[in-house]
Figure 1 (cartoon, helix red, strand yellow):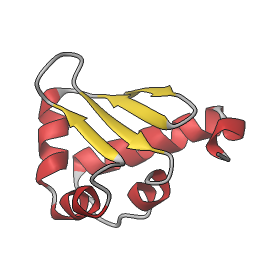
Figure 2 (tube, rainbow, N blue to C red; figure 1 turned 180 degrees about the vertical axis):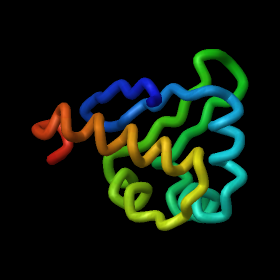
Figure 3 (cartoon, helix red, strand yellow; figure 1 turned 60 degrees about the vertical axis):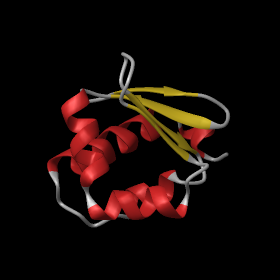
Figure 4 (cartoon, one colour; figure 1 turned 90 degrees about the vertical axis):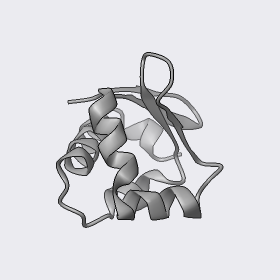
Length: 91
């Protein structure tokens, strides 16, 4: 699982660099990054490597159908995090 930190505006997902790189190369995720450039931020330069997702984008990430392992890990981690904190997920 990936480490997820929740705030009022975003989810910050810490993940290994290889998973983050693979995720950013997937066409489905690249389309999301192009569609929501201000709501998805990627840090591949400094550790910890992370992906910041605005709450508005999370449903779109969860709705992707691609079966790539990096995207599956991200979806599983997001769902697990949202189940732990249901009140924050309603924002």
